[in-house]
Length: 402
Image 1 (tube, rainbow, N blue to C red):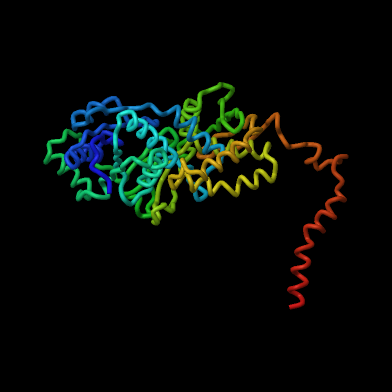
Image 2 (image 1 turned 90 degrees about the vertical axis):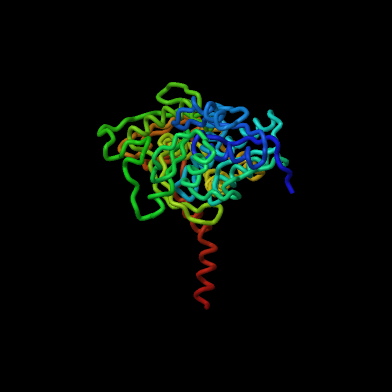
């Protein structure tokens, strides 16, 4: 049985829900509440967040710039793994949650807090991701999830709560969907998107140009890699978060990175989501192209088998779990020679690989050529095929006898 907390760190955005939660926590627990806001590259202006939190009753407010750490220590390791969930989703929301939870737990430790709180609902994945990460970092921490316990059920209930307790908030017209954004992607869920047959409206997209309205001229770019990580664009060396920003701009201009999917939530239901991931889509394509040139066939096959496991671990919130660390070790070992350059053509929604080169290339033109060569004896293929066919011959004989 958990004791009533005295000091709570709240994941705070400055919006309606978390403003209500901040006030509710103080009233419910008679506790000191410390607001925490993570800057992971969302487009909102965060300059006024601290003032809002203090007005609602926060004892203190931390606004942390996590963009560099987000891309370097979370996105790039995931890109090295080639992680993609259910064949389509590049995990933009999923990968931000463990970092936010870690940063919040750092504040909790520094402040001597005995609890953290979040505004995730009881139906989604984020509650799982936040709480698994927090438990992995310090299992002694108490986690409070108001949406699972209080009697407020809707946005209208939250507005009425603010009116009742004179909570200063700015209530804007409700969007017909919910949105989450960071430096890797923007996601849209709920509202009008809950019908999987209803197409997304064009005005919804905040980032990318519609492919049909993108420039009529293709743009070629070259991405440089070192040991599986992108390090430059068109010869210019860039820090990880600045490199992703650059590719986001390029990809968005050409309408790259839009997907519309139905995914399987960890809690058991299906969910329809629309995503914009321009830079991440380009990097996914480029990295795969360089791996095709530099990875041993069996290493590539083994790594491909593990991609769903890695992606599922990220999606379900097991970033700080032993299996993710083990998978990461194998992935990183495979990347030691994934160094070189990839050329891509950006055009009306697609990022097409047009070239790749590496000092560690396993491609040998003398072996692959259709012209005459002295390195490969084509007659050897006959024995190779006969050996591969042996088990098929045995199975066929048994079927014939039956």
